[in-house]
Image (cartoon, rainbow, N blue to C red; front, side, top):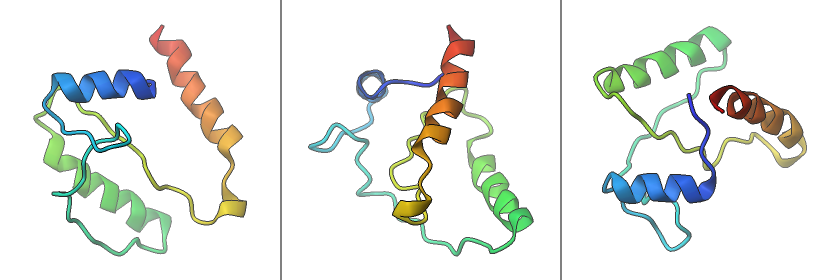
Length: 92
């Protein structure tokens, strides 16, 4: 796993033919996927596992999180930043 900066992600998208919107984020106009998030942890893990199986044959993927918080007071950005930094250090 390699963490990309916003600029690196933009370059990656351009190199792989992924359209960008006015803010330089991957265009999602064709992404129509709706599902209920299970209440239990096992159900959520199973949901992610099933979704990721669609990409089993792809050697390189870009995963972009654009809305992951449950509620503003529950956001722990410092925890997410530390998690992200742990991968950046490994990749260097």
